[in-house]
Length: 247
Image (cartoon, rainbow, N blue to C red; front, side, top):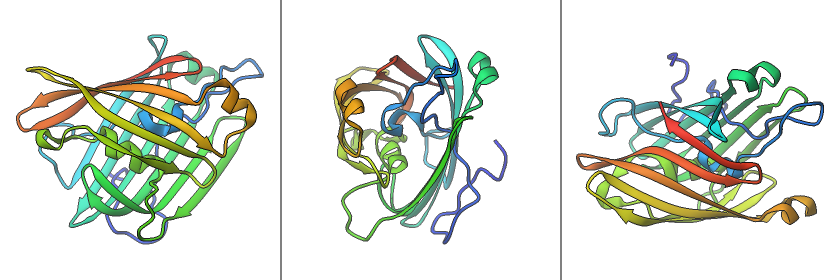
């Protein structure tokens, strides 16, 4: 991953960071569309070597639908003191990449440490090949909502074993709100499996609410010393199960 893909913790204004994230993979004119529920499983996060937390972490994951590769996710986070800055990028690959060059970018900055983040700024930028959009948000101090990327970090970042995986909250992207919760399901000698659900709350069309409101997901963590490291996540979507597998 290039050096430009390193966010600056506590930085002001827009960062140059980019993010890979598939909001929709297109359709209609012969392209397949799907939405990853609430960005949640799109930004798996962790370090690329030792699981011990470093100031800057980078990781990439392969994204699969029906077992077929559809894209690559890359995420980076920089923590300094009680501040953090994170960025995530998604791009399509393989056959999907040939017919639909999808790009999705997210940034999040604020206070807090792994895996508990309190965002102050969020930005997303999307290009599906037929539609582009961008959005900037500021969160007031004490706002109990989090942006989608902060939610991703709170669920899918590497963490100390004693911290566990249990987490819950609400996401807000400037238009849509969702709730999410995750809890430990089973624990073994090699790791932990946690299960959860994301629920659409508001900002969705009547058609979207009719097609689905609850999206179950699971996260597998490998035990590495005193740390739990995300190995893969699987989420139910309206188009089937989507898996993100650590590369």
